[in-house]
Amino acid sequence: MSWLDFLLDNLFLCLGHGVYRQCIGTPMGTNCAVYLANVYLFTYEFDFIKCLLKSNTCPVVLHRLSILLRFVDDPFVPDFPDVENFMYLDQGTFGSGIYPKTSCELNCMSKGFSCNFLDLAVRQSPQGLSCDIFDKHSQPEYAGIEMIRMSHVHSNISMTAKLGVINSQFYRFLRLCSCKKFLVFQMVSLIVFLKEKGYNLKILLKRTRGLFIKEKFLFGISTFGTFKMILPRVL
Image (cartoon, rainbow, N blue to C red; front, side, top):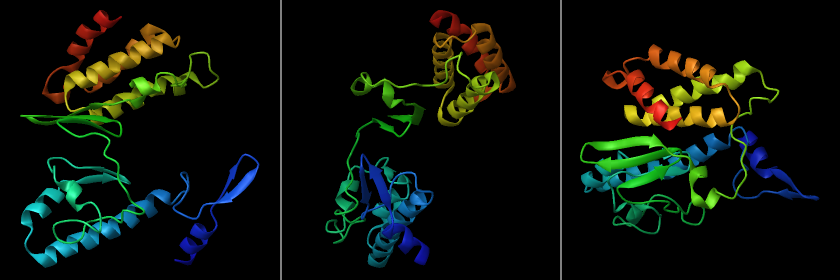
């Protein structure tokens, strides 16, 4: 606790020619900031759950809250349209909500049968939830912002590291995409993007082909066959 007291009392930032002390919260980049934020929010959530259990009159609310997800300070709430009634300490059917509004006010970024959560595009259908990759830089409001994404073929980074992005992105897509067509589309888009950066198409295809053959029967059927059919249409 003494370490935390020292950290929170000695957060100094340089901005221009000035040095400022941050007196609320922690700056992004502090090693323990993510853990502190997670524990901080958990304490309020834990107190709220204890309150619900003590009242013994809210099994429906508890069940719906059990599927609420939170990544640090970004909550994802599937199938609970009334969750806003329980968000803050001074509101709620049971006289008290979850978070203090003065320091944890939440902004609803999207709502409905489809929404974007972090780097996921989540869609609800009769078959359940589906997940695809979401890139906020593809949105119109970011169109005018110059961003350097991935290294150019002539950068000083080693070719092994530059081509390694194919492997890392493949397994990222594999982990996040809920169906074969999403994975294939993302890999095709990646190849097209790298080709525009000057990479040799044959080398890109060889590396990608090896990954698809290694994971040949993703989602129960041959994913590599679908990849071979879609790629020529795009190129």
